[in-house]
Image 1 (tube, one colour):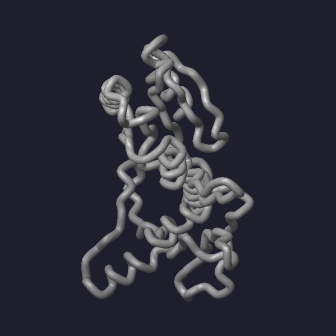
Image 2 (cartoon, helix red, strand yellow):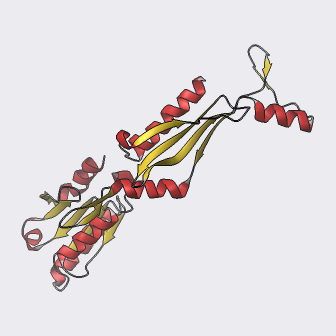
Image 3 (cartoon, rainbow, N blue to C red):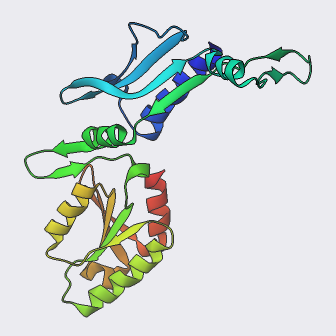
Length: 223
């Protein structure tokens, strides 16, 4: 029972702290009927657009698995405590986790749409790219060259995305849609004072950050 409760806490930590799922849209659903050898069985459910549905399961199967295998195989599968020399059949706590449904849950949880844009508010650790880098315009060699240097610098520390297609607004929208937390733009002011524009995905706020401290700035934000 203690291990079952411990696994419950670990699963909650996984969903809420590591995947960024709000506790309000998660719930444990005990099974109404238990299979004969089980002492406990619960499903972790997420509130999808159609309602709550299972994303993982937790089952306390007692010692049924090993004692049954021992019975039919004729092989002893008991564990002997090295301190007391007591032998016993280990109990099994089984956790199940479906990749597809959890991936879909993450997308549902992160999806946002308002009057101006669609974006994925992914937990930072789940974002495929942590930062995107682009020149303000792609037809000015001096901006492109500086942007490439910044991209090379950031790529050594972060999973970065280079984009010089279309206009700046469309680039921002594309990065919003794939969940990139920050966009770094190299503009004409960069050539004058070695600062860049850093745009936040969620708030769309922009900050001027010195190139000399851009890595430290992003590390602090992504913690």
